[in-house]
Image 1 (cartoon, helix red, strand yellow):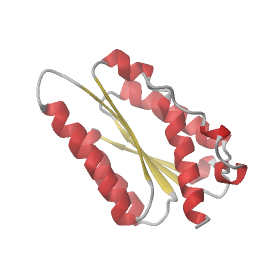
Image 2 (cartoon, rainbow, N blue to C red):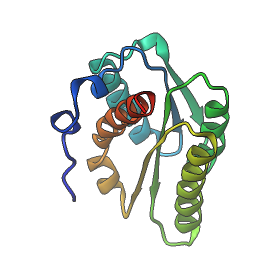
Image 3 (cartoon, rainbow, N blue to C red):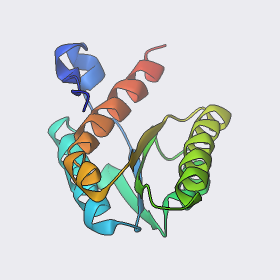
Image 4 (tube, rainbow, N blue to C red):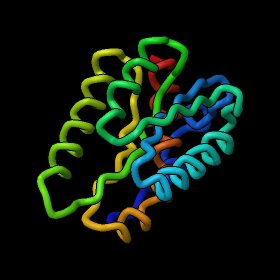
Length: 156
């Protein structure tokens, strides 16, 4: 597994300051034993970087396939500086994995580009449950990324 970079080491303090930010989190309930833990790690990281808990909104969706639409709708409200899409797609014995993972990832990217609001790709796509469980901590990275990208846009 690739090691995640500690982003705090590479970015100026002002880009890591979440005190003025409003962040949305869209959380897939499929594999919720993983996604709820991901949410908790992301929430902790956001608050560690100064994001006020009152400026963080969680919206649950049934599965990863629904992530792009709800992320886009949240972005279109202009109430959020960035949105984090959290989900897990675990490979099975059918093509279902490919359809869900591909469409969710393409939809998230398209939604972000079309709205101009950063939508952070926090969708784990793994071969098995153990790999997904091992990557729960990645949600901290996604949260920090949302702060950096939001502040970068504000500073342009």
